Image (cartoon, rainbow, N blue to C red; front, side, top):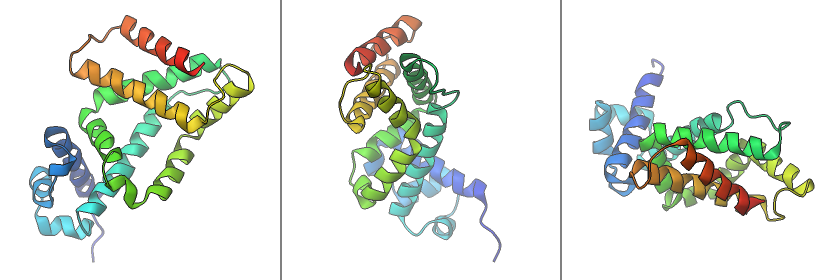
Length: 192
């Protein structure tokens, strides 16, 4: 048996993002994935058992990519506000440049798919986002960040970045430095 082609696997996962961006996660089908990836349905089943597995692995892959982007050039030793703003800018930039992936991740997190392996996914999420958890705990110890559970603070932060990127993509407001700064200032005031 010859080894599986990672390029084909990536094409399949990318097809899930594209289809979700166009029509929503609930409308994604194996036939649609195969067509969009330009591979035979039988070939898709060599790589994945079923749609649920494709969607689960698509989530894990995009979560990894987004997390790596979020913590690019992160330094916990610089001032907390500056560190948090770096994560915010990285996350916003990723969301704006990867629309289909962010639509997918947003819809996945609000679908029944998240419940299939919720405990494992939460554990993985906490591990991947340890830099942010550590930053918030440092901020709480220094009296800069509110004494609220970190998962609540992260949920607030994530929701604000998601809202900002959605507003920009939908052209509700223009992308400019003033908007980026104002949005972060609102986030900071909400967390400090």
